[in-house]
Amino acid sequence: MENQLKTILAEVKKAVAKATPADYETLRVEYLGRKAELSQILRQVKDMSDAEKKTLGRIGNEVKTEITNLIETLNSGTGQGIPAHFDPTLPGIAPEGGHLHPITQMTEQLVELFGTLGFSVAEGPEVELEKFNFDLLNIPADHPARDEWDTFWIRNVDGAEDNILLRTQTSPVQLRYMQDHKPPIRIIAPGRTFRYEAEDATHSSTFNQLECLLVDENISISHLKATLQILVDSVLGSDTKIRLRPSFFPFTEPSFELDAWSQGKWLELGGAGMVHPQVLKNGGIDSHKYSGFAFGIGIDRLVLLKHGITDIRPLLSGDLNFLKQF
Image (cartoon, rainbow, N blue to C red; front, side, top):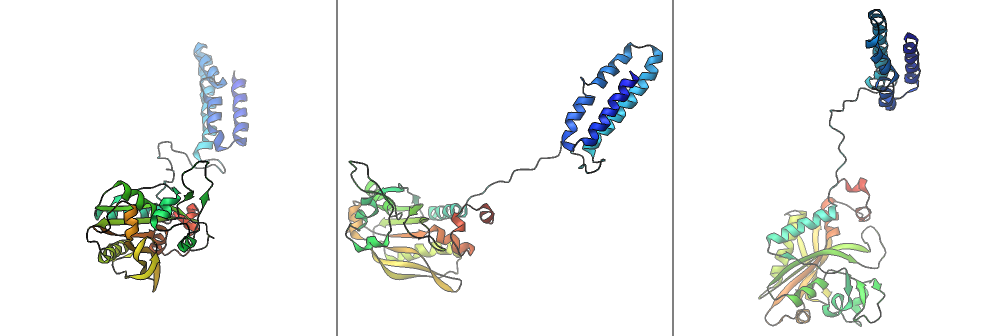
């Protein structure tokens, strides 16, 4: 039995010499576990004579202690190249948590802002009918303004009532909402839009807009400008100047481009204007009694300005190293 103990000890020394810290638990169970050969030998000591118990008991305990110490070097850091002791009671390494995309953060900021102004959120489909994206917005098929919207058209299913496309703007939500609701109307419609154009530092084929529509009695340009000033102040700071530059859109009259003074120059943020009477009529609203304003702001553009980003492509790339900054 003494020889068996010495043999086991020799095996352990060889095993530990070749082992790594990852082998700690395997060796502990193999040589010190309840079914290990050493444990079985030590259980036989109780049935021996007193003289044998005294001799073999002492040797057995010495061997067990040495084996335990050898195996523990894999876990305690006392051996060469062995890491420090692992404490299972210490808290684990928490996985890195995600956070909202900067475009989502901006969208939620705008929704909260306009909520305080009494606006509700409206939604519309991204795959839209031609009549809502163009015709009812005062842009018939032969209108030259259609050239400004490079459109993704979708092949029609046989028997479809209208041509189908990916919406080029969030303005179709205006018509859908007006046809189902009576004034006063105060809505915003954030969402994705699509245009078939080359992508560069300031353009993308998929981008995000915030549509705003207010229809009520006696609405004027002063209401439009005040609302835009509140929006810009909230996002870019209260000292940011804005201007409404005359422009043309078929669905508003008069029409403006919204510019903001930022970083020493005027930057375009989006289009705005008073809702065209024909668009109100197409939405089932009496243009003699009601008036309104509408504007569409690029949410992506607001994110670029707020954070001083000069290239839109990393913002939409899904690059986590870039997005973790926000």
